[in-house]
Length: 276
Image (cartoon, rainbow, N blue to C red; front, side, top):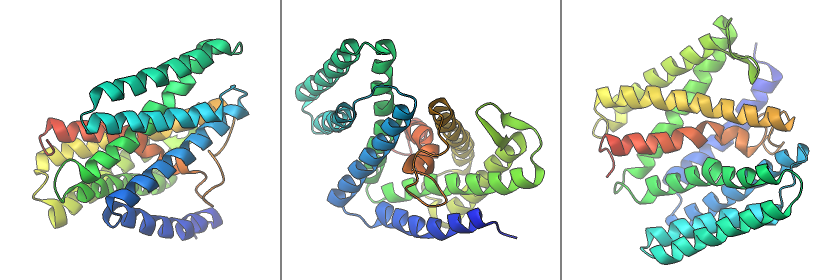
């Protein structure tokens, strides 16, 4: 019998999946940029709110400014205005440094808490834009969907495999419900359904041996990304990053698997010359 929470997750998950598919395949470049920036702002707000729960004195205007300046720096680099991009990065670094030093409480950690989301949240959002519009003509959407697909089946297989066979905790201090068996089922689920998608739709992009290597590493990274967010929430003393999505928690709870796997995926695609 399906639990109430699982039913709610499915009911809210289906419209989210439909919206994600449109975002990946249907949104033009301008709309894609706007949505990506909005995702960044929501994720940064949840991140800052979580730290506020821990009484870390982050300042929201500076958090949001760091997101804007990091995106501006990226865009300037992309359009070959390297000097302006470096100036933008220097301004960002100076602002974060000055604010961290001037704040007496935990100043030695504040610099980290401002820098961390740029790499943890901002960088994956930049990479998803690059994949969609700047790597392979007409293939970017497929590459993003492939990552979403294997992450989703990792999640599904890990949930049901762990529920049925899970005995040994994977990371008991960080996330007590996750098990080694569930993790193994997640890797297997991602691998099976990832290869199935390649055979049906993407055999021109991925040779099988490369696909197996990429899928296994990316699924492991997705699971690690989930644990990193769990560790962050445990540090802040919260259960969910927010209550934005009924049954799922916050936006960070939904994208946590991609925050580590996207940079790794992008690097592997370059390493295997699938993108260039």
